[in-house]
Image (cartoon, rainbow, N blue to C red; front, top):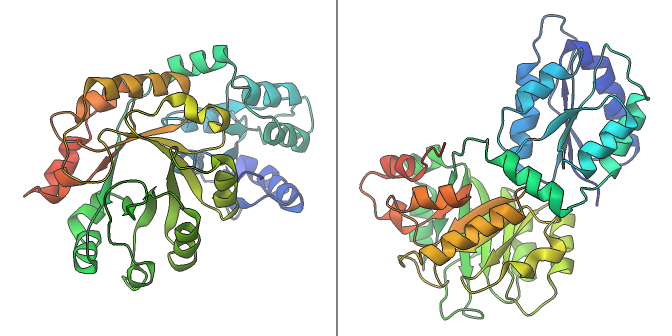
Length: 366
């Protein structure tokens, strides 16, 4: 499956960007062009670099291509963002090694300085070279990630028993303003002794839904994934439990062919080795901080923090989400351990000041 490509350039890289866009579209790539959309000699590179960098932080399976006069400006700007690994592509060899060794997700190509090889060939090798995943490179990337400032994303979770409560929560304007991505918990008592309400046809009638991810705590996730993808255009990601009794890779491939991101959830007792064979194909790992099935449980503490740290060390390129038992007292330790996405239900919905709670749940870890 070809990755989605985000593309942008200022005036100095404008013509090269147009050539790259045409080249990639002819090769069958899905390209999203963030501009410039017309030649403006007075424009500046930072907005274009930030647009591509932000898009990739939200969609880690995508790749980016940037251009300005010397490619250094856009490279510097893009690398200000967490989980961005941008490099200047001046040759085929540089493009290949930045992907193979450094897992670069953005290549920056000069628009005014002649490169050692043809820019289109440089792009082709960047896009066709996979990350090696070798231990020494993972170790180095883990060290690099320690330099980043972590502002974890707060993802409100919805686990309810009726439509009225679902609509009340997802329509909450205060929480909507602070949280662009929401998680819907789906249980049908096939995996855990609990059920939740989620009728796709009724949810589809709610106007202006935010971006959604489904946390599928069920043994047979594909039917509901297909139905939700058809009815809810804001569905961004599906999270499948590693413990289901079906091969995971075909499900991952199928969901990605639907245009969805895929995450894998691990119960507290599930070992990380469960995801080793397909860790380079998924977007995130969801570590359960409680035993699934009910909201309001107490976070399981030290053993989960240890698991988060190990996940961060092994898979620094993935979003690490934690779900269950998160509150203002433990969120800082969870983020410090390596989490960059906190899935929170009770702490938000039982709060009298939801805005302040969300801000307090998102500590800055230096």
